Image 1 (cartoon, helix red, strand yellow):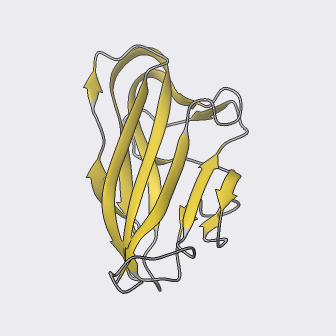
Image 2 (spheres, rainbow, N blue to C red):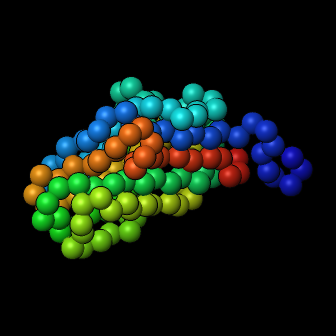
Image 3 (tube, rainbow, N blue to C red):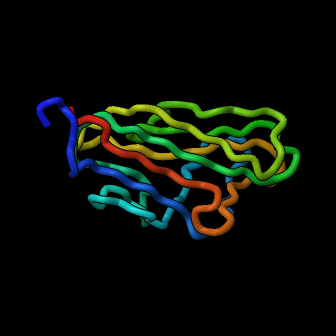
Length: 150
């Protein structure tokens, strides 16, 4: 519209997973594999191969995600946003974690509409760390929407 907002055609997505757990390597940033689309208004999320959001419109996107961790003797865990394969933003990091805790990350991210993409990663340290999804959409998700085109 004339005020710079996008009316009725903004990109938006929300993805979940239908697997129960995703094993992660202790202390290593791991891409969260979310393979079920709750919605994806313009088919911008690859839920089969790369598990990433790559919109064809340049702009500022509100991106957020949530993880639930599992394992024993957990020491650290945190979700992260990556932009085009590079670390972008840490979410809440917790030490002395107990299994089953949910952690979130959110930020405003500029995506150029051609090569930029957003991904959700997680780092968990402890014994047998994993991400726990439970039933579809119960624990881990990744979502975003266009706030303003560039």
